[in-house]
Amino acid sequence: MAWLEYLLPLIFLFPLGAMAVIVIALRNLHDARVRSPFNARPLREPGQALRDRLDRAFAALFLDGALGPIVSLAPLVYGMGRMLFASRQNWLEWALYGALSTVLVLIYCFLLIRDFQLIRRIKLGLACELAVGQELERMIHPEAHPYYVFHDVPTDTDTIDHVAVTPHGVFVVETRARTRPFTADGREINVVTVEPKRLRFPGWSEQRPLAKTLATTRWLGEWLENRCGAPVPIMGVLTLPGWDIICAGTPEGLMVVSGESLAQQLEEKQLGPIDDDMHDKVIAALIERAAELEKNTPLNAPSI
Image (cartoon, rainbow, N blue to C red; front, side, top):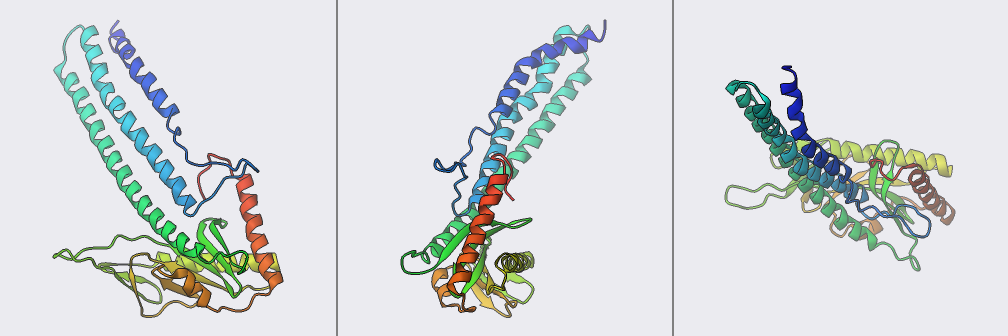
């Protein structure tokens, strides 16, 4: 029966299939997320959303790196099995198996390059968030000053990098990491111009960072007003670590800074007085929201 010549070579694919199943089962072996031993809630650090993305990126890199050779070898292994069982040799068919393996190798090489570039971008973003988080930590002196800093605050559709609650306002702090270009003679260009609706970098411009920071600031202001029963003085802060900022017209309700000496800048920024009762309500509302979302989010669910 001619169809057996195509069915029997599948036996040679069973070991490769078993290895593929093991690789897929181990794809989430490395998971850096931990839970508190006291209340079983996830422990969150500055940049936790990016840490979770980095874990998923490394899992994808592992999957592509391990499955790539297995999948690429499958056509060749099947072709060798066909050579054993075939009644006559068909060189066009063998060439087809070789071409398919070559295409699969190229595809997985592209996926590995993509994973590597994604990991580099996430690491750069994480480094910038950690640097800004360390600056904000300088504001926390529980015994002397009523400051409170939250990291990775979830909104309805996104995540706010940091929220700083001070006696004179609430600050929504977003961090953006951008690679600085170089001139032909090797000098680094690190100057960005802030305009009312865009950031003008050397060679390109962006509107989304300003729009997103303003949108999350408005969302948090409305949410806090609904939860606390009164408007709260709030301002958005967009940080671009490593860049020199030139302001040619910052949007209202937003400040764009490099992130250096951020704690001092926020301490000096007077948005409006917040009495002790309102201050406590804001902090309690943010703590309650974080607790509710963490309670309803499964351990393996993607970050918001």
